[in-house]
Structure formats: structure tokens, C-alpha cells
Length: 220
Image (cartoon, rainbow, N blue to C red; front, top):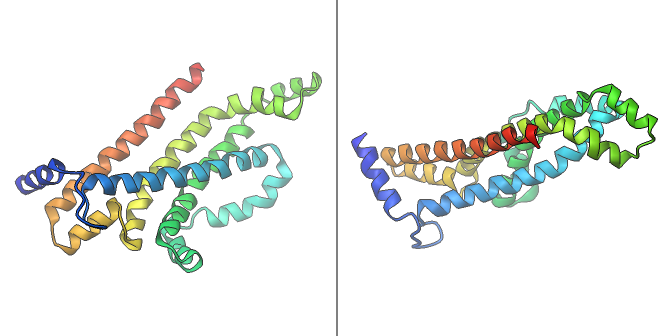
């Protein structure tokens, strides 16, 4: 504990330093990881939410794509890493690809379930008054599915943050995963403990941010 405390003081006393491409303070590693996670998370949301509404409301589409989803969903996100490196030939884009694959499924499945849980009477009423498709989505499907979508967002974001650390250990470059692996190569165990604490605190902050959004939704 004493060595970890001393290492934390040393690391956090100057988190913004730059002495080269890879010799930078912990802030820049943290910023790189957050940028990758948020970018991949947003791309996954753009794909998962419209697809979730389609599969949740169109039974034939859900039946057709469900086997593919159930085959791909259990695959570990890190299993996509070698394929990403082979196809994309770029560590940065591969890291984003892994994040997208890890964030896609929780949000997709929760969106599907949210749409399917809509009260059928509301949909029948919409058909009775001849409401248009976009009106049904905006006024019925979206408000009903939103709580489960927020749950999917929470799971996707936490999974993305979990996966990016492991991915950065393998693809290298800047990031908290690279920082941890670099400290291991130096056998600096106290610095690794400090990095683990930082990773955990940032993960807690991300989860609390989405959780706060979840609390707001029922009152919106």
C-alpha cells in the first residue's frame, strides 16, 4: 500500500507531461481510451437502435435475423481482434471495431425487448386513428422502449470500457491498457495498482452518468 501510494503521487503529480510519442502522462492514456470507447459506443448505438426497432416491431425480420444474432452474441469481443487486424490492418481502427462488437449486442437486445413490451392496446388504438408509422414510433414505441434502451446503454458502455483495456494491451499504442502493459514490462506493480484504481473509478463515473439518465427517463 505504501508503494502504491507513492506511485500514485508520482503518476498524478504530473499527468499531462509529454516527452515523446509514447512517453506521456496518464491523462493522455486515459483520454485515448475514453475517445475510443465513446466513438465505438456511439457507432454501435447508431446501428443497434434502428435495427432494434425494426426487429422488435417486424416479426418476420426478427425470426430471420435471430439465429445470426444468437450465434454472434456469445463470441468474446477479443475473439474479433485478430480478424480486425487482418482485415483493417490498423491498430486504431481494430480497437474501434472491437468496441463496436462488444457494445452492439446489449443495446440491440434491450431495444428489441423494449419495443416488444409495448402495450398492444396502444398499437391497436394507433391503427384505429390511422396514425402514421413515424407517429407510432415517436409517440408509442420510443417512450415505451426508452427505459430498457437506457439499461442497454448502461450495459454497452460498461462492457466497452471493460473490453478496451484488454484490447489496448494487445494492439499497443496509447491508452490505459497500453499503460498497464507497459508498467508490467517494467515490473512496476505499484503503478499497475494505481492504473487499476483509475480504470475502476472512471468505469464507476461512466456507469453513474448513464444511471442518472435512467432515473430521469420515467419522469420525462
